[in-house]
Image 1 (cartoon, rainbow, N blue to C red):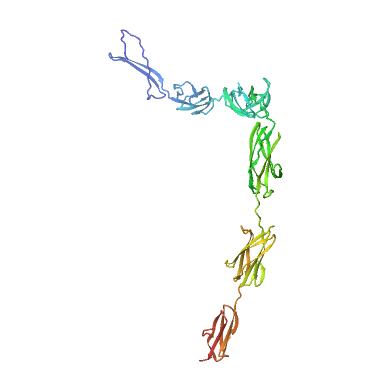
Image 2: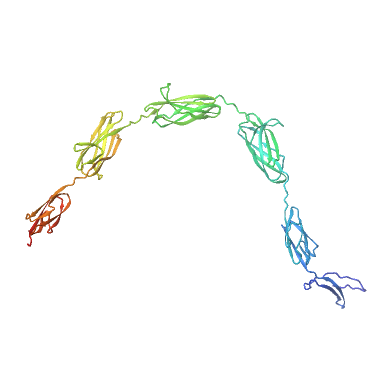
Length: 586
């Protein structure tokens, strides 16, 4: 600092402040001593301010706002220092905090180093250390106003319409209140303002309203379809009611906006130039015959029918033989003659006669406003002659052997016979026919032993004919089979009856027998057992020679051989065995 020059004593003052160092002790009282001195011409003076101040310990209170900007907090008592929401208080101070919400918020609660509470003013824990607390706020929910509707202006697109047309509409309005659903109801009516006579009300249409704290504009658009119950030539008003689910509503009427176009009355129904044409040709019973039937019609829209008949006769005579079920048709409204055509087909019934030619007659009728026209297509359909039907029967089957005949199938035919097949065929038609036969005979091993065929001509209705084959050997034991086919019409044979089965069963061949005889030489010197016998072919017979006293068996001769007293002979023919003996000791 500097001292201005002074010729005499002048009173002057010094101002400032000092910062207390952190070496000072809390709770201690300090005096302040100041020394004022000059430098160039040294001089000084000292002064002491006794017990000038005490050192007090300070604690920080930190306040947080949730959410930020939602409000602020004040404290009591006044803080010793700091800035808003970061205040210093002497150690041990009990601080009360008060929450102040900003507009649009309300106080919710406290949290942190204090008792959790919803009271706006509350104490913090004593300030014995740093304390941190939070003031919680929440948005203030302002309920919407009571719902209401105003300025509802329903406008249908005016004009002249046909029944069934769609009429667009536009309907602005204003609304305030809670979010909710509602309904739009549209009615058509007659009358002059303010009288409205309802003629048709459409089903209600669901609508929705958004929440609006004040009057808010909205708009409904759509269309409605004019019902057939409206009167041609009449002008209609449109009345619409817009309502909320909680019962608020407003109604608006669009006067005289829709006129229903006059519909001219169609003329008396009539049909002309009906030209039914079936596709001509030769057909089989059951065939489908296409047809086309152009015509001209005028009159109202209505249903009708097409009736088709088949008949015989020559123009102009028509004798009905068959009438089909009517076919449903429809006529469109026509104010003047308008061409139409009916296409389809009909199936020829089984009652028609083969070889007959038929005409087709069709009648076209309109039903409610009755009128009709008939047309005949002469001689267009011929029924094809039915092909001949061949019918015949294998009336009898026999096998001949040993001069006798037995009905097929035959059992127990003796082995080794010769067979001869006899087959009878019958004409079962009502006319003279030619008969043909073919058979195949197979032995038990499947070997073909006879293949026989023949035709016989000119057999009257119900007449039989016997066919006789050739002889063949029945020389295998087991079952012989035969396949038989009876035919008619030699130019294009048609099989009319068959038999596939057993011809006969042949027994086993007889077993041959052979005789065994024996002889002793010299005679009366011994004997043979067995001495004789008759045996089946292939049998093996053991014979034994026995000697009398003083003699020994020597050897076999004849059809036997060997030197042992017993030997075996196979009986494949008649056999003679000779036993030779000798004196004992020789």
